[in-house]
Length: 498
Image (tube, rainbow, N blue to C red; front, side, top):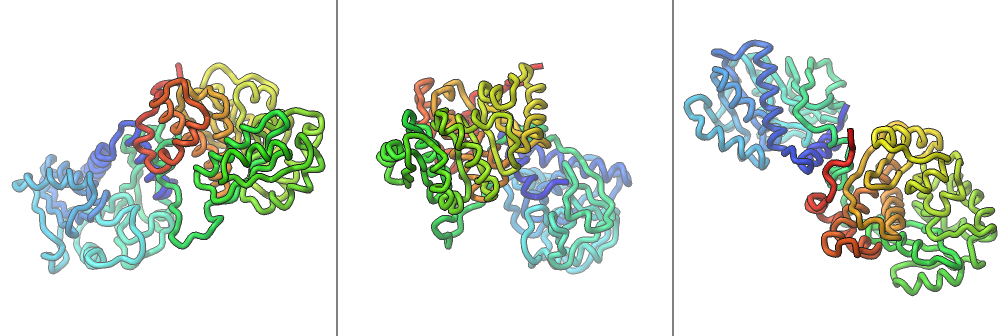
């Protein structure tokens, strides 16, 4: 099954990969005509098509053209202005087909019609709320009309996801649905067929702009903290930049509050990087067991935790880390485990609320084996290891592989400049923000990989291989504000061999 939001993601990703929604509409409309021809032939067929404003209406317009081409007598009944961009293209094509296709408005229809086939192309997966005029009247006339009734994608008047009736709805003899079954169809005993319309498999395999376009928008009445609270724990007497980069990336991704907990001297340095960061001073030169009690109130306050950037591998840190990670998991807080934190926890069974983000060297340390050479074998390996550790694994590289052990996503939107130090730290902050905003760990890791890579790619277009992790942070808002154009800047096309 596929929900309406998942379908919109696929369509947007498909267009980003070069298969336009206009092409998909053409394929959808033609597949409806094919099914009608298979069902009852088309020569001398009388077809009446009720066409809505949106994409489903466009599918109906394409169907009208193909049926006319096959010898059918076609009447198109519109609900008013055609608003969908691709549907407008197909409507313009019909305006000159004045010999083979009759076009009229629902306002001029006074009574039910009669045809060999009646096609419902009124309301599709974008329908929301109760059905209003002119659609409620059109649905009533459609149901009262005589002929074999076909609904395109979902019957008009039914919520495609829940199956809820939004008023009177079309009762079809056949539903021609696209790509996969819509959940709402299963609530009824409708006869349906599923038609593939040319969406490339890569539209669901690779994370794309459609995934970002589906992100929830901030409401006008949102209060402080609605964007999430993120706690970054890291840094040591040697390293201060890594946790700061994670925190700055988190803020730029949209977290409302970001706390950075580091040993005292390191926290002082971090507080000087930006007044936007809330620095928490931990006792000692490095992360130690005494810090765990100090951090508990901050973990409880946070919506997600990052642990590991710049942490170091001092003996006291190695000793304290498992206890802290266990506390975070027991409190049910989403956790991104990276860098030294990941190295210390090697071989551990974690939880489904945890994302680990190893590069190939860290992958070997944590899982005890090298990433496999073949991309396809590496995907299977990452899925296997995600099941083993009971967590989400994001293996970084020219091809990012993300898996929760049961599904996987890929990302190839990076560039050679992303080998710069600190770009892994920006990734952890981005992922943590998405988790703090309520997105599942697998989704957050997938979105994070894409946002980090596209941000780096925008920086790479300006600076080439001279980019820094701070440059990546500065581009995050550009990606989130305009993911479609950011995606067009990607460097890699084909990375999987064989």
